[in-house]
Amino acid sequence: MNYLSTRGGVAQTSLSDAILAGLAADGGLFVPASLPQLDASAFAGAHSMSAVAQRLLAPFFDGDRLATALPDLCSHAYAFDAPLVPLNDGCSFVLELFHGPTAAFKDFGARFLAAAMRALRDRDAPEVTVLVATSGDTGSAVGAAFHGQRGVRVVILYPDGRVSPRQAHQLGSFGDNVEAFRVAGSFDDCQRMVKQAFGDTALRTQHALASANSISLGRLLPQMGYYAHAAISHARAGRAPLNLVVPTGNLGNAFAAILARRVGLPIGEIVLASNANRVLFDFLSSGEYQARDSVGTLANAMDVGNPSNAERLRWLYPQCSELNSAVSAHWVDDDSIRTRIREGESRWGQVWCPHTACAVEVLERIRAAGDRRDWAVVATAHPAKFETVVEPLVGHAVAPPAALAAMLERPARAQAMAADYAALRAQLLQNVAPA
Image (tube, rainbow, N blue to C red):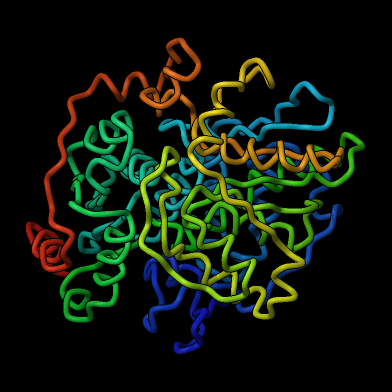
């Protein structure tokens, strides 16, 4: 299968080349030239998440030099579980995506991408710089996935003061080939700087850059795997198609669910749960996309005012009528986030992170409207990553999982950086062997 740009300004390319390029030369995002259609028979005998993902992704890798590596990529990426846990009302579930090494859903895609780049890189190839902007969780997942990987330098940009203390510690805890920079600005500033670097022809003729944000197909495609596994397992249990509430910021995780349904997985409705950064809600309500400056909220990893993957969403559903039939959105304020965290244990027997709490608030609205179908909220991170928000609301400490606890024991360091592309460019040009 070949891949093209959402903006249509470049020739079709292979999956491997699209992964290595990150962003298309015309500034667009890579998307499949065609979409496969799969039915239940395609997954016969596949029960583990790795096996399901391998069947799902095989058409996307068809004819590519990574095709033979796909079984190993899936085994590496899906080495931990993503359980669909029933809640206490008989028709609600939580899809727990936080059991990886950095306690966030982004571990799946980051590990897949790191393994893919290992498979693609020649032993004698020049060093590549993996450049990533993060609103909290992406950077630590990418840092963990690429830490110690030969021939790869990782540069992480995050908005100073706009991630949780534990997220900030994670981001600066790797060292070696992973550098963290705390940018004096918003996530949107970080994302803008990263996109400027990928559009800097002079820079890219000197040095090899690769993306690890959800603009990368190497991150996006594997995120379909856990939705496929959950949906197929749910259907095999004799249940109706599973509906999803997905908390979203940059729209990569939610778009993976939308794409999984589009190729034939038994997924019902998909509802986006945003925080006070309501760009997607307003877009779906009005049909007009308008980026805005992001605002800080309790759900900081979703503080995005210009979601990159909205471009893929508009590519997949170019007509407003199609888009509104495919997906809907709600936005949630901080007071509602606090309420859902505070009531989580008494109402659902769960402690929620602020992002998952956005999805829970939307589920509560759905239930209040009388909907008794099967719905799953997508839990994107472990609540212990947000102890300064969560613990005062639940009234007790929330123990971090073992991998996160070990990471928090390491020393951490991040360098200050202005929200200015010239500052990033200067850092990228330091200590990097020419391409």
